[in-house]
Amino acid sequence: MSFSSSKDCGILKDNTFTYRNSKKEVIVVFKDNKHVEYHNNEEYYIKSDIEWVNNCEYYLIIKESTLPNFPFKMGTKMHIVVNKVRGKKVYYTSSLGGRSWEGRLTKRAPKK
Image 1 (cartoon, rainbow, N blue to C red):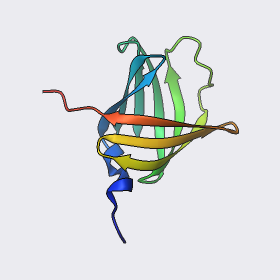
Image 2: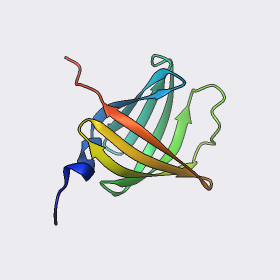
Image 3: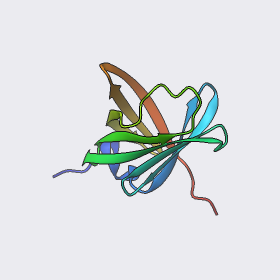
């Protein structure tokens, strides 16, 4: 078994990341088998359960959302595959309902 820095998906476990959505920062927290996205300076959130396939692949099952006009129903299952990890950045492909899109998460420094 070989380990490559280009695909060390262990970075996802119990960490906090950010991504940009419409020029706004979204905070993403992975904790155990839970995934929470905080939008609009933590005013809104999307909470999901994680079903890990392996360290580089998982499903998010949407459980709760306060985000206005959220397009997905509770219980919706999204498939995510990590394509590569480079430093603090995680590049991934999400799939849902026959659509796929690519994204990038950036690991946040721990709060002091």
